[in-house]
Amino acid sequence: MGRYIRHACAFCTLLLAALLANAARVQVVQSGVYDGNPYNRRAEIARYGQPRGDILVGGEPVTGSVDTGEQLRYERTYKNGPLFAPVTGFSSQSYGSTFLEQAGDGVLSGTDPMLSPLPLWKDVTRGASPAGDVVTTLNRAAQEAAYRGLAGRKGAVAAIEPTTGRVLALVSSPSYDPGELSGNGEAVASAWARLTHDPEKPMLNRAVRQTYPPGSTFKVVTAAAALDAGVVTDVDARTDSPDPYRLPGTRTRLTNEADDCGDASLRSAFEWSCNTVFAKLGVDVGVKDMLATAEAFGFNDARLRIPFWVARSTFDPRVDQAQLALSSIGQYNTRATPLQMAMVAAAVADRGQLRTPYLVERTTRRNGETVAGSGSHPVRQVMNPSTAERLKELMADVVREGTGTRAAIRGALVGGKTGTAQHGVGNSGVPYAWFVSWAQADDSLEPQVAVAVVVEDASANRGEISGGGDAAPIARDVMRAVLGR
Image (cartoon, rainbow, N blue to C red; front, side, top):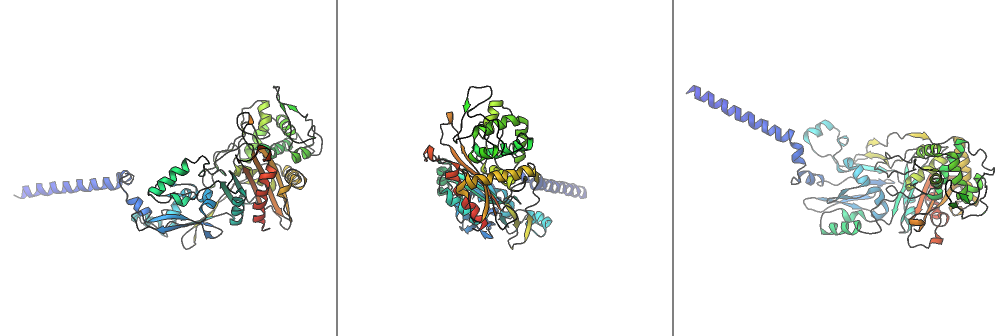
């Protein structure tokens, strides 16, 4: 009898060991499979079981949460949703999240281990910490001025602080209300279908995800390359630049909108945006040096994050001389985001130094205690400081007496560059109006803001579009907001 009892005990022990092993397999080895099973809603229920953290602008939240009383309890809400949509993005129970809602999700949802005073214990218990907040670098007044200036027209504005890289404004128009996508009902599905099929593309973040031919605003880059390479040593000396200029190896003749561009000096050509002078300068500088300067400014860099990714601005390295001439005046394959062109203006303003732009100042716990700061932001010398000083003079001349006079601000030194970018088959599309600029108050030792504006309004008359007419006043109002004028 004892032998049978021992056998039964051994068999029960074996069954118990197998049961424990299988439980360990399910809970440890295969936990990811069960967690990721679409029929397992526990994680989703837990995710929306507490209010989401806030995104702050100027110390005030521009987001919130509302208790629906449903299984997915808390839904996201937005204050002035269309104004801040290019920054916040949306957080949807049905369609995921974008922009800061996505990039800062760990803090905003409370799943970031750094939010817990005892991170290791949190990993054991798998409990959620109270959600934290994301504090942005935005200047609310500048954001409002940019949005008001675009007034629903298709376009975008990006503004940064040259000496730090802080993003002060990021506006895309037309915009949308991200709150329409927060829940999971039929109204959300209907809003998603409407927004994603809208030909105006209101959900496209034109400030960082759309690239445009930069047109004459790219002449800032070409001028920097020519000065650094020694192709131009005296900005007031006449250049060998015929008007019209025949593109090398072709019969195509490039002309100008302005008069007196033949052999114009760099100062005069910059002030009145002479295509012929800058096209020839690009050819004289050569592909290698033009490419090196463009890439120093940030072109062809696919790694830029602010913290969400930014579309790559491009300068084509595989061009013949005719194509190089067009690329050097911001046409052919040259493309740029508004943020990239704001970076160009910022580098000129800050003695040729370019600081990587960033949008998040810090993340905090719900009580305001800092979890993480903005971190270090690399600085690179884009051009010689002397080149930057000369370019500051040229850009100031544009605003003082050239094509950008509508950007002038009393009590501040303002530099700018207008641009009218052709596009479409045979340049048949309505040109894009560009303006890039920077401003420094008379009582300040450093430039306080650099701005890029692009307006692509299909309803405008072709002859009425110009960087100086359409885009410069918007840039002026954004700069005024930052300067407190």
